[in-house]
Image (cartoon, rainbow, N blue to C red; front, side, top):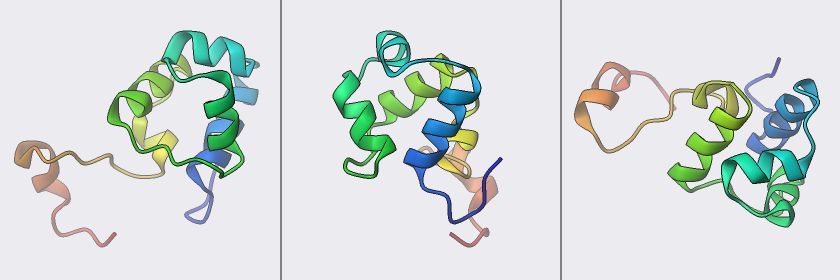
Length: 88
C-alpha cells in the first residue's frame, strides 16, 4: 500500500478512500475536526497526538503501524524494547 517515503497524511487519505469513508465520517469516529484531518492529509498539520493515531487507526480498521508507517513506539520499555535495535 505504501512506501517508506509516503507521508502519514498520504497513508491516511489512502486508507480513508480505500474504506470509502468521508472526512466527516472519520472525524466523527476518531475525534479530530474535519478541517484538521484535511490538513493532516495535505501535509499542513502533523499527526502527533497518540490519541488521534489510535482513534484514526480504529476508525479506519487499520493498525497504527499501517497509519504511521512503522511501529508506533511509546515511552513504555516493554513495548519499545523489541524494536530498540531497529534503525529509524
